[in-house]
Amino acid sequence: MTKQPGRDSAAESDQPEVDATTPTAGPVPAPGAAVLALLALGWLAAMLWSTREAITSAAAGITAISLSAFALPGVISAALVAGAATALAFGNLLSRRYGDGATLRFVGAIGAGMVVGLLAAVAINLTYFDTSTTNVIAGTTAAAAIIGGAIAGARTAPAVGAVVTAALGTLVFVVAFSRARDPLFDLFGAGDTQQSLVDAAKWVSRTESLLGGLVAGLLAFGYLTWARRRALRRDPQTRALRWPAYLLAGAGPGLLLLLAEVIIRIGGRSLLDLASALSEADAVAQTSLGTSRVDNGIWVLFVGALTALVAFGRTLGPAQIDDEPTPTGRPGTEPTTTANAADDVEEDEPDTAVREADADPAR
Image (cartoon, rainbow, N blue to C red; front, side, top):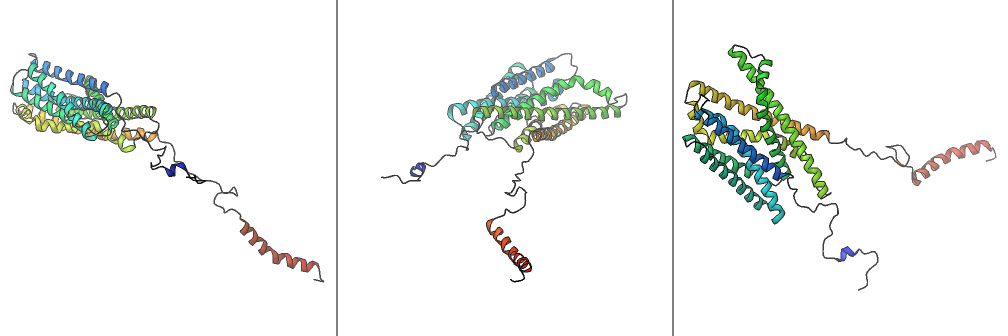
């Protein structure tokens, strides 16, 4: 059959045309997930070891139940982050080998979290003293790791990686900040009275939360920026994450802290009740610490989200306004057409005839 002139060969094909500007790559993986998993697992191991040393210390002067209650939040937060980081790395491995299926990724993430939780529970039961608090710590830690793995099963892997990075950095910052608390107590006017100590502790806690939120927001923004550059090197047509991803990444560490508090109050409720029943001072201390942890999570959530969003906003350029000039060179004026020119000529003709008649009396 003779090919008709001017007919596109693509129209004769049964296959639809593929737009070159449409990205064909799958979801972007989280970069550095394996390194994050190793760091998070190392942090969990450090928290478990420090808790064991505090409980078994004979020079502590307080009961193991109180020390277990004091150390439980750090262990649960570390298990939550470790489960999410390990599940994120395992999800990247599954995506490279079997493709990116949402169901497969979610099941693999939960499985990775279960492995982390099981290993942590076994380590606690083998190394801690066999007391009534050991099983509570082991079970709550395992539950936190599984929940963290389920969180990592989300489809937007770079955003989850940013949350894990920011949360891990926030936990490390909180431990490092403890060395600066004594000088800050003196700076905020802690004296010999009980009220001055309470006021100073409140300001120290707020300072810690504010700085922790800044650290979380900056780490989340930095990770997403790094992930974006790596994705563009792999595929220039990769779609950029919009501002909700940065907002969620900045708020993620605060959300994890609040989630850890929920896990503590549900799974570790029996341990907290035992610690509060020791004395009136222990009851007041547990209540005060619980309130302080909730306030800290809220501060980190809002400050981290605002920091990440502001940092993302500074990367946006000014809005482009297309104000194209008209053919006459002046915007907003209509171009002179042939019809308009003819109308002008017709309007000028009567005046011209009058002037000619005045110049020639014979006419």
